[in-house]
Image 1: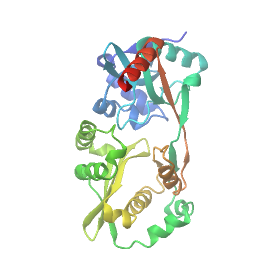
Image 2 (image 1 turned 180 degrees about the vertical axis):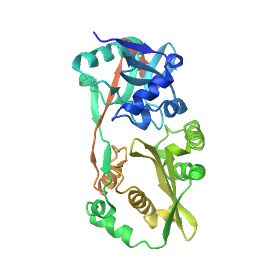
Image 3 (image 1 turned 30 degrees about the vertical axis):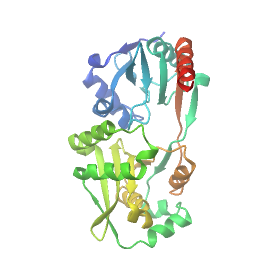
Image 4 (image 1 turned 45 degrees about the horizontal axis):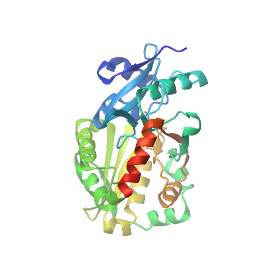
Length: 300
């Protein structure tokens, strides 16, 4: 039996949490204390004296607690001490004792209630080596554009959010105005954790991209063109430029993947490959019956 404790948010030791995150080779921006606080209320499972841990975003529903995946937090990974089957079993036993509904992503497989999700990453070496792995059409689209320029300006993150909402908001309704406002506030508060790129065509904005920077990894958080930018392949230009900016620095570009075939194929055209994570979906029998009954009544 491991010394594993469930710790509520107000009792998480921030200095010890930060020390664990900074010392772990596999920690992501989504493990960062300030990043988590920006988007959710979260508790944690902590091993011993912060030898290992996993954040657990929680949502209070009527009569029960839900473990969920907040906006702009792709997954909640276990970091620190290596996982064992016994430790995984203990983690799950505590989770299901605390939450009636679980729908979240992590690097842990909890048996057949967990399924793999696509996460596409691209190690950045040199621009020349990376471009050799681009698809022919991608290389052609980037080469033929000569009028575009890119600037980095974290203070213009609101422009990036607005472009994304206009282009893809209807496809991502889970991202509400509160989520965008929280993201903008965090970028303004912690600009060193982000890279906000504005793509210009003759000094006019045609696309914007936002990356979170942490532990030599660039997480592609948002990116969208306007109508002119789409015609000019401005997003491809922007991603290529970001790769150029970070060559020879041991960075990984994390596209965060997509289950949408066209988006997945676009990210793969840069030469990216899959580094999967796992989606866990579970609820207690009584809640499953209650939700099923509610849906049936709603349809009638």
